[in-house]
Amino acid sequence: MIARRRPPLSPLVWYGVPAAAALAASLILATPVRVAGLQAPEPVFALVPAFAWAMARPSIVPPLVLTGLGLALDLLWGGPLGLWPTCLLAAYALVFAARRILSGREFLGLLAWYAAACATAMMVGMVLTSLRAGRVPALLGVGEQLLITVVLFPFAWRLIERYEASETRYR
Amino acid sequence: MSLRDGPLGEIKPPLIWLAGVALVAAIAVGVGLFLSDGPHGRTFAGLRRAADGLASPTGDVMSAPVRWTGDAIGYVGDYLRAGSQNGELRAELAAARTWKDQAVALRHENERLRGLLGIATDPPMPMVSADTVLDARGPFSNSRLANAGADQGVTEGNPVLSEHGLVGRIAGVGPHVSRVLLLTDVESRVPVMIVRTNGRAILTGDGGPNPALAYLRTHDALHEGDRVLTSGDGGVAPRGLPVGTAVRGFGGAWRVALDADAAPIDFVRVLLFKDFSQLASPAELAPRELPSTATEAPETPATIVPSPPAAAKAPAP
Image 1 (tube, one colour):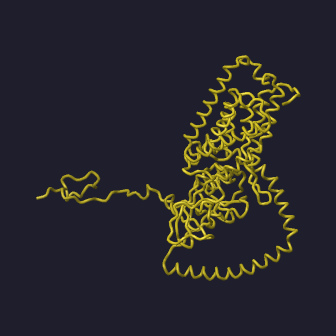
Image 2 (spheres, each protein chain N blue to C red; image 1 turned 120 degrees about the vertical axis):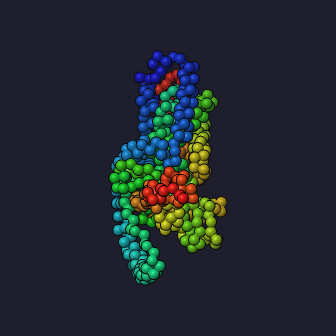
Image 3 (cartoon, chains in turn green, cyan; image 1 turned 90 degrees about the vertical axis):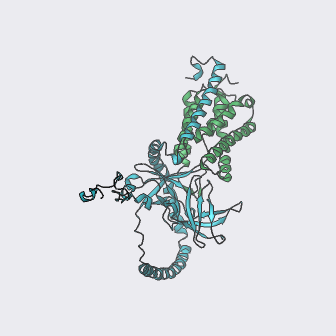
């Protein structure tokens, strides 16, 4: 995909920067501001690194970072603790299991898999929330959040490109 | 330094296995936390208070510039629309004067009737104003962070209103910040009544913009636009707070278009409401001394009976 070589990624750049960026973006979009009467969407930015980490270099670190990131989202959004760690890890697990099938796919192929990973996370969230609250969350709201999260795929693509540009072993 | 430069970098298959094991362990931790967290996050309340305390000033700082920009845009818009607004406001004022006369007459009549019936009116309810600094509006949690906490007397369960109507209730309180569980949250349940029919229902959130009217019980059929207020049942909120109007949902079920959606919920009022079950002290209501009981066999008195006078201790003839 990428011809230009770059220096190897340090763990800080590969794990720390995407996690911090996802958290910061979630925090910014959590401000109660309306523009022209419309509220900003609430995508799940953390699904971007979850997909990229599972695709590019699975190791013992991403599940730990995703757990921490999910807990931070639970605390930020006021949801039950453990909800988003489980959702993020479910998406990660799907891509982790299908990693060999995914290698070498182009933009559209990976976009479809990214959408599937996001849908898995949302499905797990729906099941857990339904079990807890005794009521199925509004499908329209789930669909809206899924759609707005899928739109973030170019960030995941960029992250994978950045990894491939620096890692020789992956090719 | 890359992770692969470390001593474990050359062991490829075990790393994948370790990654799998770490994944399974992390999922187990996530599910375990989810199962152990109580209703409205009570199990980890301390952790939540600490996190809310950290997030509140951050959200306050971040939302300030956007709020200023919004105010500036609003100011310019108001200036440009001043002429047309003037006409609208004059018309509204004329209508409001008519309503004011009717309201004054009704208030006097109401006071007289209450006096005749000897009904004690409700005491004025103290309230606290707050800014909302963070907002979660996803399908799985709908809550807001308000910058008023225990230091201002806010307690868990207090109803929260915007300028238009009920927004939700307090689900967690920190020293200077509190978490508002919105009516639209999937865990929100509030008893409400239909004004026209005096029917009762439970307003049930599902993450969507219009909460459903569950367990609806009313003699007359509901109509679109029927007013919905809090019923006061169960002590969740005082009776009569404006909630919204009844609307038909997609599946034909009755839902409520919330009054609070009419404008941004930037500022809220927290009612420092306590219902009777909160006010009553069970210790004070419990009898301090049990009344004496006369039994037919005084030679075997119950241990709780107070000692009788000396004359009564004389054996029966």
